[in-house]
Image (tube, rainbow, N blue to C red; front, side, top):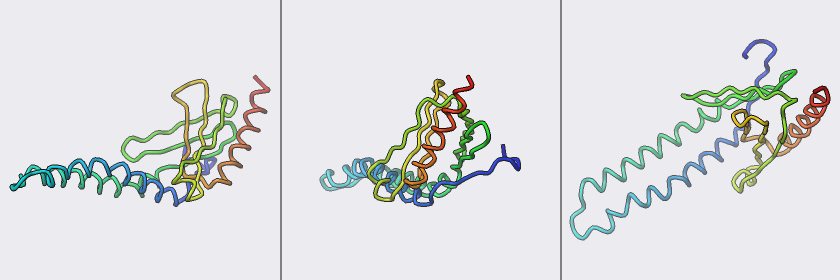
Length: 160
């Protein structure tokens, strides 16, 4: 996959900001819940109350610390017959989606992504396991890539 014919493209570095915001928002409720014993206890605060808060805070910091590496691990390549997508640090995933098998190419934007000017391109085939979503693409790049993939899928499907 990493031969001279495969030219890997990376996603926007702004996706790192989006992922940090979403990760931080995801830990707001667990952090708030872990502080409940600290402000509800009458008089003495147990050590276990602090352990819960510190444990959630450590998991949150580690999750945010891995965001830059997770973003760098995401990439895609347009080859002659298929699109290859890779992601993952510990559990790596490498998927090749043949152009002729594409059924749907979708561009989606969440509120944080929209503020940053990013989009997520989703590719759907008949096989559920080959569905691919490429996050962190600049909006114009995602729309150009969508149009390009749709055109390729139409030409490849005509030969079936």
